Length: 253
View: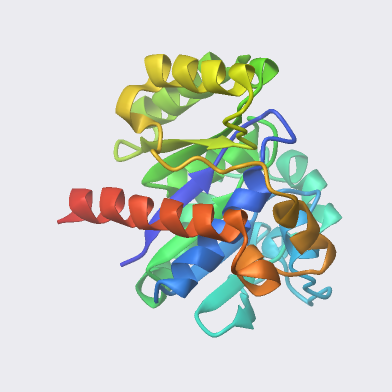
């Protein structure tokens, strides 16, 4: 049975899509079967992996025109793609009964096929994000280690608490990921300390260091392990995946 994880932050540029791709790829490196869902109308995840336009995307699935149709990136690593069409989905689904549970129903038939299903949420707190949270057991919050990244964190936590109370009792914060970290910068170290005061042991020990290879990999339409498996980015995401597996599997035992 798959563990479903959403990556959420309504602030852009914090490494959310990069983390979704490379946590997924890292899990595959560790022998897990993974499906990513690109739930962002900007389709950055789909573009970053060089996936060509498909007949069916998450948009058609949410509209009830198809089941989930994953694209196989490599063995054990599938992606449900997004397109710009998804930007109209929130308005189109607004009058649907049970609209918050559409994605959960779509996932039900494939839960046994994967170890992890990881959802890249849009940078907003609308209906698409609500569907992701209603479908997930865990939320991961990537936070850039800069002062402005701290703004709005309370709002994210408030939304998660509200979804847990009203729609999904099993939802919990799986962890906070410090991204773009540079140990030489006092500001970065201070922000991490602030995050730890707020979230406690929810903050992952592994921090994603600022690494040019992580920015270069999408331009080559590759995950970090394909692009440069010896980079600090690959090292950090593999360590993060091991930590995440320990957290999720301890809970499920």
